[in-house]
Length: 175
Image (cartoon, rainbow, N blue to C red; front, side, top):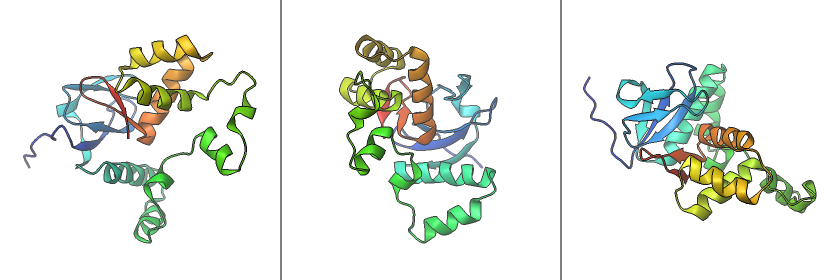
């Protein structure tokens, strides 16, 4: 079965050959970095579990594959078919969103006003307009009292959840 490579506006759910991490990649980069273990992966040799132009469909496909690994594939399919999951239900809620939904001021969680690492990363990606990881780290560490390690972990988690995607050119975009 010969499948043409994905277009630049397509999303693929791929698996890392080293650590089995599933992540979403936009387009068809020559290589991509595993969000979990950092391994450089040759895109054309990776198994593509799902390819689509619909970002939400890619997020749901990844979530379904993760549910299957955990033995919950049928339950996940039932929820998806029943319309019980919307795109926001598949991604995790940030601390800020959680506190705001409770009617609380998110600033009360940190006396210094430092955002959580995921919030800082999401804000930085939107503020800098498609930065590279290094540009994002420089931007945030110059302004906030967050370590580079905390931020790299947040970037990895956000990529794994599908909230941000690393483009073939190395820039990060929010989904």
